[in-house]
Image (tube, rainbow, N blue to C red; front, side, top):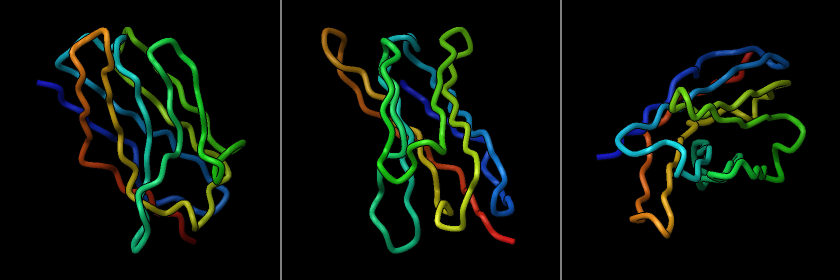
Length: 119
């Protein structure tokens, strides 16, 4: 069974930085396509950044230039480096782990980590 666990959220001042981590276990980590999503109060969940199993990356339009997504297959971990944080970045950040064909497909989410940007 796949388990997805996020960490690294917290309270940070505007202009500050955070690094989120997502550990995925239960299947071979290298076959996952991974993504970070966020959901602010009263808003829909949106894609922040994604990284495929062959290391292709994409970013949401609202965060381009501000974030860097990466993965370390040896540590079963994906990261999201967030810089120049703004109050509007406040949200719960979720990790999504997807396996696509030719492997047995699966789609799993973590419980999220809260990021609050406030002075």
